[in-house]
Picture 1: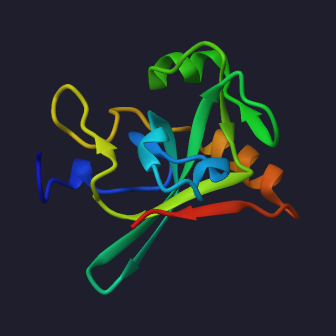
Picture 2: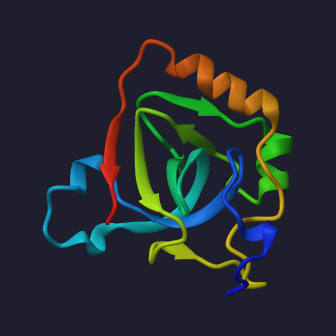
Picture 3: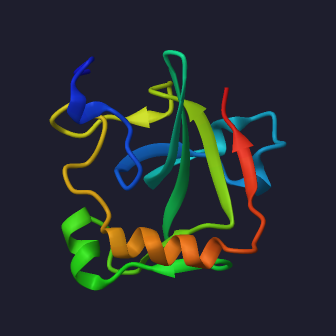
Length: 137
């Protein structure tokens, strides 16, 4: 992988391919249920030299609290035509960790990032809601 490359640093709004573990499956000792899916980096916190990253899943046919991604933005991000960002749950992990699926060019993040408008819409939807968080070791 391309280490120490600024293009591989986690940043809110970046899209990654990540082995996402749904909250409903988190208590299962067989964590192989975690499926590689596109995820939106929602937040990054740096503690000394460690980067703690929170991701939201991007799921086609999602139910629950979610935000639709405009069709042009879906295409630019390389997402399925029915993809929505689910914000009622998140996975949190240390970057880069074993759960990332590198892109074909070996980078860790997809080339395009989510729009500021999409991030604002998600933030508005999150207001006053709680989220289920799965911490990935």
